[in-house]
Picture 1 (cartoon, rainbow, N blue to C red):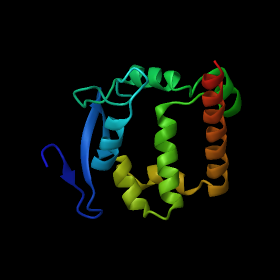
Picture 2: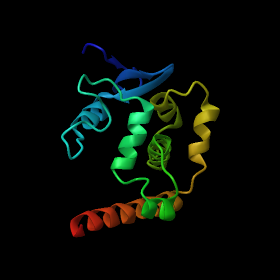
Picture 3: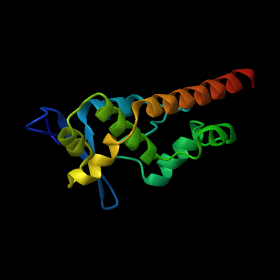
Picture 4: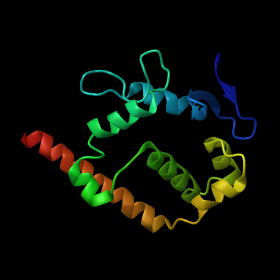
Length: 147
């Protein structure tokens, strides 16, 4: 597959995106999901039409458009950023007993110390936070239906 490489240990196909000098590693499956997510105007949320990663300000704008940072959600969960998605992904992977070295590779960490912080989270706290996010999203949907 052109533009993709396979991790020898996990057998997962990845591609790299660059935002400025920062490398972001996406699995083929994640990239396909990102390409499929569309806004109400039909434009992609995370990737441009040429499949390049959107610039950070565009991703923050998408967060705002999706209602992640409206006053209700900020009051309930605080302000959210794309880094929160990355942290949540890593924490859930560790909670599902994915080996830390695999999580380290998925996140592109060069040191295992960087990945260790995700092992310290209590899964009950993670599920509680996930339920809070679900409540916020349900409130957003209800508000849009009643408007």
